Length: 275
Image (tube, rainbow, N blue to C red; front, side):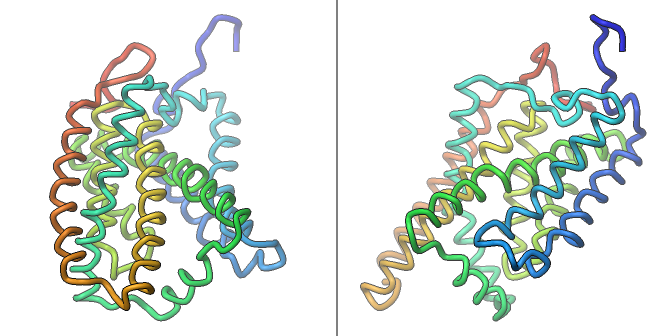
């Protein structure tokens, strides 16, 4: 590449179908090679980091091998502190509504026993475990998942289905990716909110911040509810009513945060493939 010449964009090098295939291939690498049982010799929680790393590293290597810019390929456009703040608030505000939707979902489909055991095994105990667990769920996991879903799949689906339908389709794919039918409804809503964030801002970074904030809030709320339930012998009717009211207020707060997001990017232009 000649000095002063900008690297080609990924959409100039690969058709939408090939970009979509790239995203699916990255997810396949996550599933096939990232299984924790293959990396059981590593100390906890390192096995959980293998899947995200096997998503990110090949993605970066493929983009660089094609001669494209990583920043442009995955829309890592810096949104500025106010936008990051609204994304953070939006992610935290998603926690309570997702809890209510999850409670409804689990009434229809009970969680699998292996999932309950896995969640109990992943519960951090020591301070070191808390730090490493938080870094994993607030940084590495959101970075890898948003890179694939909102950085690769959603822009690739946009020219075919339209940007709004692409956000919905990829949001549902995001929910299915987690293989948790007992939590499918809230995951789909979260995926579509993240897709809307990508659509509004044109950047994946606000999606990463929102995703990380949601994960952080979910873990902290889950720990609070676990301790409260143990102390009180269960969640009281009053506590459940307060949570429900809080969920409605949080849903409104999330929507208010989304309304304050603005397009960002090299020229503050619209998202790729916008109508």
